Length: 593
Image 1 (spheres, helix red, strand yellow):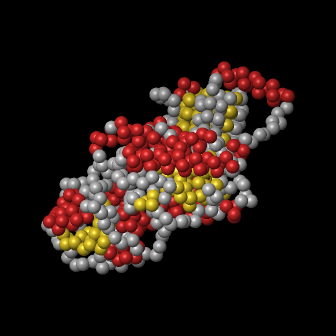
Image 2: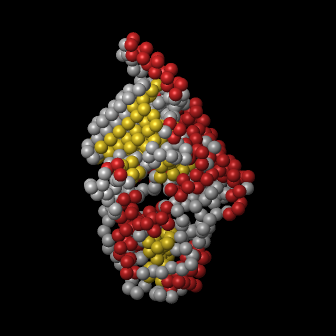
Image 3: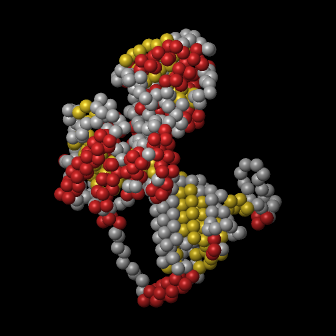
């Protein structure tokens, strides 16, 4: 269990140690990338994983630096009790080993990054989190069991529901939840809505290194060339591929390149041939350069799966996009949205397909651009940094004791203010008087609100329910004015200096059509409104103004005397008139850069 890189940082006990837990060698590319990122910034890293190769159904014998392999019971069918038992036993062995390690070395903070499935990992990881407060837990959802199985109504049987429950019940124990695609978040929002809404959730796509790229094509004239890459298994919709070939064949000849193998490869070749395609079988190709040579001969890469399959941006799509090869896609979710919004190919809805080669080069450019902006290792690193930046700090760091310098007179006054606070604002901690409150019934006070002298909280107009909402443990300085006409939400643990002004409204319109004339009396100009949202842990400096329509992201700092006219992302320091980002928090380096 000794983490790799430990020798470099053993003298720095404040450094968090990272333990990555994984079951499948098919996820190992992601694990290697996480390990590389954490080691680069000096974190000790250990990977605990299975010695069983899922695809080949054989044991692995190779050793890897920084990896600790655990024996897994072999299984030979993907959907079987034998597989569930293997994963259950593996879960107990891995997390028992981690528990033993923590007992001996529990004087530092640990990050437990657990890739799911298997779902039994969630239960065992939750036990570790409960037993050791210094452990920070991230669940990285790489697949959804049983939701992604193409078995229709059988997913509702008790056996499969129990499989899902193993994951959903323990999501709440995590400090953060990461998913491999947006689609998984929307699915879990239905199966485990309470847990998903209660935790920070991030999408972390698969990624590749950004290697040199040159657009060099070798296309056959007057022929449309398609490519199928990957395992030809029961998840692939061979009928849909044949239908696509048949439709295109009416316009021009079709050439189908196949890279890969699988139990249904012969069936794919037969049906594609019957539909009118000429087949070139390249067999299994792992070499990136050889694959890209084949992609240069193709117009589109096929990303065609059965409707019942629930997947995100899978590895074959990333292979295509890295080479700038547009997609013909029928997979709903992230890939469908990317094709539609970013112009990286054609979505096939089963009703027909219209292939226009006039914009083929534009689609190739879009495909490569999408890869560079969304799927590169540098983007992956920035997203991991953001996730790390939002993890809770250790207990020792949180307990900061400050001594009060109040005199006897101030203590007596605070006693009077406390009595008044509990009578007028029972959930608040201490509100000093005088204080001006208008529209009190539309204000949600949260718990533990502290406010200085001469503050003004007001809601104008009539509303349904609370529209000015304070989070818990909000601290407000003297002479703070918050004026609400539509909706203002203030997160938990927000700190505001004195003379801060927050408003979600403005007299008159000064942009776009129908702007107000300076000849119109100001208070007769139409009231413009837009909601304001201030995230958790935000610090707003003295004299700052937060204007309508602004969102300030979690953990950001607004410098004193700033005027915030546009939204501010999470984890940054912003300042000026108008406010602009000055620094950004790097969660990996634990520094403002």
